[in-house]
Length: 99
Image: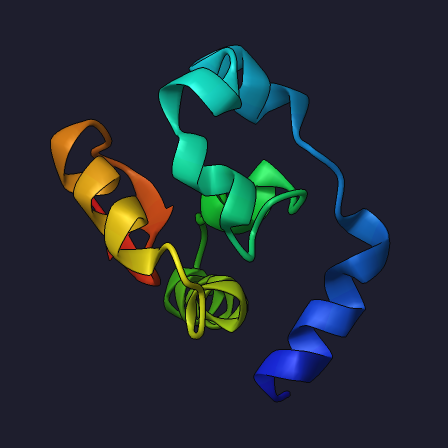
């Protein structure tokens, strides 16, 4: 499935995730660049997937492909990457898995 198809598939699920708001509080204040991010409104489960079981490798690849469909041409990818390296430690940020 191509990136555009993946994004259209998820379009009905795109809402600002309460989990992200709980974790980060006011996004405007803590991550002002995120207002311009392609992933704004996408569910947190896309970028913080639960990957377990015998198909974990395939699930990891599918999760990364879906996240990259948002990150690929995103204008704030560098800001996201800097934030991920400074603050985060897990999840998919700027199109790559952090572990």
